[in-house]
Image (cartoon, rainbow over all chains, first blue to last red; front, side, top):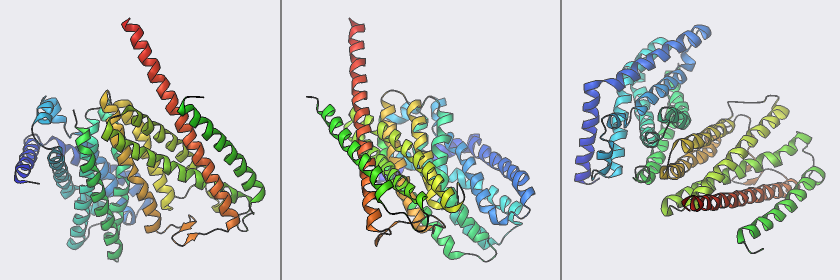
Length: 229
Length: 229
């Protein structure tokens, strides 16, 4: 990215974050929604199986993926509501810069939610864990959020121009996130298991990193065509 | 017959009929019975060839999607649409035949712990979403978004292959390995015939549907011209 592109990227990212900081619509809604789902899981599964530690990773990442759909669904929505979408699209900013700023904003929103939700979920389902384990899970969060952010920015840019955008996005996004949920859940379980499975953890993290790189390349190759109006 | 497309349909039709008849006779009457699984093993010839041709269909959709984005020619959009539709039908048939085989061989209709079955289900979900997106997008975006999505979805196909090798399949037999096919030549030859028949059938159906799309477009143009007077 050249210096001009970097300036544009930072300006777009600042705009998104400032908008979110003022309204706090997306992160608060995602956080509350995730907490509700965790409580639902606790009452529907946790109460029945007793020991939820072996399935905690799956529950946590299913919850976070469903919560992420809300955040991704808000992508481009403020611009559309305030009727500035066309102005942004005709501005002399490369599509790659737009996509990178969107992805970064989504990753920051997701991390904002996970800072609260993940420790709470660990307390609910595993009865607490060490600080080192939480740091290792934070690494999984960063990698998985990158996957979600890239895929989310890409698919939200298509769904926003569709007739039934609210219906289309979950149908497009959730199947794409299944491998991310499976591997992030696997990595979390590997950390939370009584004898920490570091080799398994590294394998899952590597899969997430490769997944993020592959979809970043796909996004790089196709994003220009999505916003080609 | 002067129309090249009609000539292609005729040639492919004859080829498909000959290969299908030869394949059915060969795999039911000539191919040896499997010593372990018995008669039910013969479903392998259908199951694996349908699975491989469904992947071929998604590959054709991927290439056609990229070609559409480059050239914006409507014909490529037709190829994407038809290939995804045929690929999805074949993918569903793969899961059905796989499930029948699983019941006979392992005593259960479905095993989630097998990564190939799980990832194949993911591929079906991903390509089902293609139709939701396509019906929701309008104007020039319909073909553009469909092409981009066909490219994104195809990325899931190598992941489905990768998953079975990495996640250590529990039950699914891996017939084709890097050291060759794990079956006798008397079986392999009929598998190749079944695969060739299924591939010819796919290209025949693709060609027939392309002709139908071309006729529909010509009819639409005639109607428009008549309306304008």
